[in-house]
Image 1 (spheres, rainbow, N blue to C red):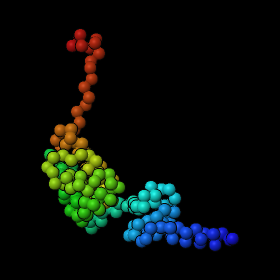
Image 2 (tube, rainbow, N blue to C red; image 1 turned 120 degrees about the vertical axis):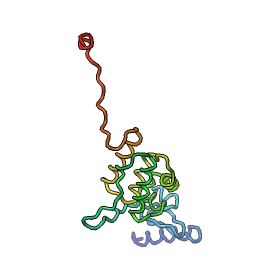
Image 3 (spheres, rainbow, N blue to C red; image 1 turned 60 degrees about the vertical axis):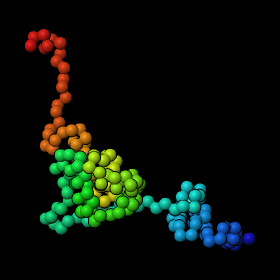
Image 4 (cartoon, rainbow, N blue to C red; image 1 turned 135 degrees about the vertical axis):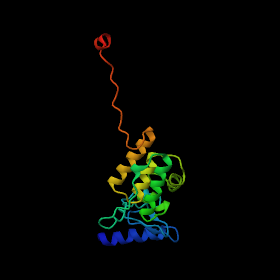
Length: 179
């Protein structure tokens, strides 16, 4: 029997032995109706479980016209509530993607409900929620850096514009006696 005939028999066997309404996945497992099989290798969790998982690549936010920068500036925030306000404005600036879309865009770093909580609370959200929101809205590395700096400054209790204090050093014992 030729290789092609053998392959056709195996496929028809798989189709006839599958539950009604199911079709074989390209990777070897079964896929439920309406599910997408991305052609994973046999035995991969997405195929074995019958559930397809697509990883989204975050879409970058559309930039403003030349000469305009309407992105909110998180570095102006002095309190947790102001940072959350900057996050809300960034979400609006990015076109108000849904919480589920943002969760998918950031690779499920946090859940959609955690993103909702981060945008509706006045308390300082967890760092992971801030980064997930910026990623989910298509923020650039610069946006992530600015929001991270603002979050760290507010978390540490420093006001905007404060410079970090230099570390205190102990004087050597000889200098302490003479002074």
